[in-house]
Image 1 (tube, one colour):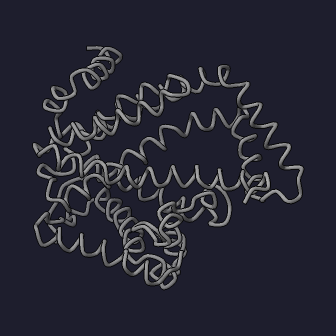
Image 2 (tube, rainbow over the protein chains, first blue to last red):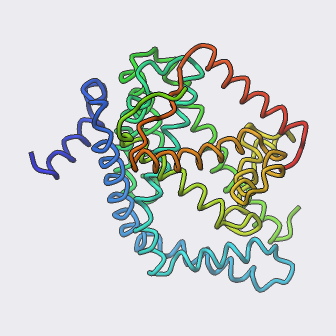
Length: 215
Length: 132
């Protein structure tokens, strides 16, 4: 079987028949599972960036104009100025290329941190019946829905929710545990991740409210 | 427990890479500038209490600079994790060089209770200390 065919078949099975894929996952194929997760996430993220750029250009320009208007105000919180600078930098072609090159590194890092957290919680809850390779297989194949990163705007949100659900299915099948145990093991790390995302969103909102002079 | 072991597995090698990346990020990223300065704990903002992970960034920041007493005052568990990251990276390098031993963690009910109590104790410590 060719490389591309194998990738597409794994992707199709993970999305449409996850129970079958997780049941047949070999725990000694960690490198292949890591390769699938990193390749899948990186390729579809890059594709999403290419599609999102022209589609959301107007919205991005409008936000930039608002932030530029605020940055001229001496009372504006320094964090807004830093946000503006970061936003301008992130839009430049060199940064897009740099981010595209760094995506496999971030995917690798987040995949292992997520697998370690999930496994740690599973161990504490007494749900890690088959060791770390089983948790890793569940987390790696659960990256399949990140193919939706290629869909601009809403793709990433739908992909992330699907990923969490697929991760729970994976934990249930690979460790042969109950649905409740699998859900508890998987949801705890995402609670932390949600906290971080909320933190970023909350800080941005607070900074913008301060900038427009609202308490 | 230390046991005889062969060459490190793919996951052991990958974890060594992750450990090096985390320690390098803690060494390179300043606490008072983006992206770290843009993060704030929503749990603490909502409740006034720290979450179990509060203080971990600062603990890593100080631990990687060898300022362990300051790191411990922010989060003892995160300081331990930072030290474990360093130890794992060094041990994996030694195993690649031919060391035939590796630490083996036992998944026993006692170990699980110790882990759960350590998490809880760290959370209480961070809450009482109030530094983050």
